[in-house]
Length: 147
Image (cartoon, rainbow, N blue to C red; front, side, top):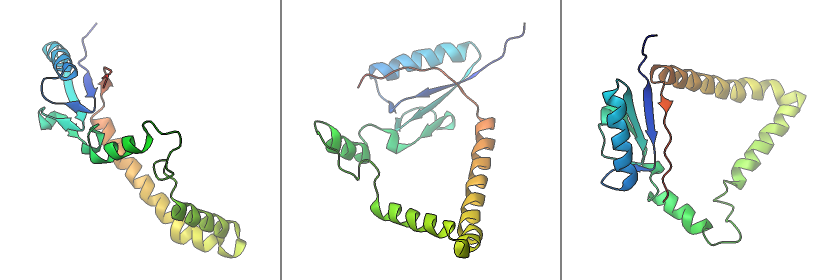
């Protein structure tokens, strides 16, 4: 049977420096690469080849947004609604649109002027992501960081 190389993705909050997870993942990447596979990296902090990496700063555990979330939830018995994504204005607007969609006098207008535009935009975004995903399909190798 023929051998088929795989695309292997490493995902963590950080692949940078000399911490244990970074070193261990690098060893695995060397083994996979020597065996004909392609390795890719995703993290919030990276010191890898950017041609084979996706840097998303918000994925880093020390990113300011993640630090803020940690301050809001760690050691707390109750969570601040803003941490849970409870945006009251957003909920209010969603309820108004829902009510207008249920009203026969407004349904057609709201569907054509708002819903169809949002649907088209979402469909276009899904198609773009799907094309990109198909072109960069990765078979994942999972490691867990204990931070």
